[in-house]
Image (cartoon, rainbow, N blue to C red; front, side, top):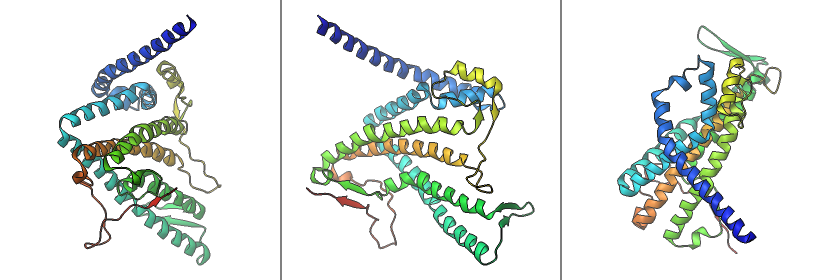
Length: 314
């Protein structure tokens, strides 16, 4: 009898969970429509309540299911029209490539700025750097030295998906290379759904509230309901983080929190693109492998740059 009761309890909880998911998927259409038709409720930041609504919905269950439902709709349409799914792949991979190729120049800026800092410190013994046209931008040398971290963060956060598309990440391969072509595509689909997407969502939830705790007070919490945040909005004021690690150091560390959120969003979008590409290559066969790939080449006669690959063997 106890086993039967426990079994009924498990199936009852499972049924309630499935019903909750289906209800939230259905509500996602209404939530999205309401947000689009009432933008002033969350985009008019002259209203303190709008700021708090934006904070709440950015890390809310409602927002998650809007994104999840959009993924389901795109997938359903793509299964019906494979050309549409290929279009999604090309757009998302194009976004990753475009951002990566643009922000990769931050690496060059980082090197040039470091050279200038060394010359000014060691040769000209200048305590600060001033640049500008008419209105000078003047900061201590230590500010510019710490600001170099921002260039590195730009490369890491905004070029990561570009590197993924280009196959530039190091892969430790124990099984993948030994299986068949279609099995590889199944592994890729599984990895995008059960590793890339959940990781992006978890880091987003942490990074979103981590960001806003360094922008406004009272500090929002991930456990706060909307009504509690709206009540906090009466005392809301901007308190943007401007404290450096040294007395005259870099004072815009909140930008790193923004990059963390952008990093998660790009990973999630690339997970969608990778899932779509893996499915289409699985369905269409080996002749579609690498279809529409926009690979970088070193020169006109060179082969596309191959990814770094370490294949482990037992």
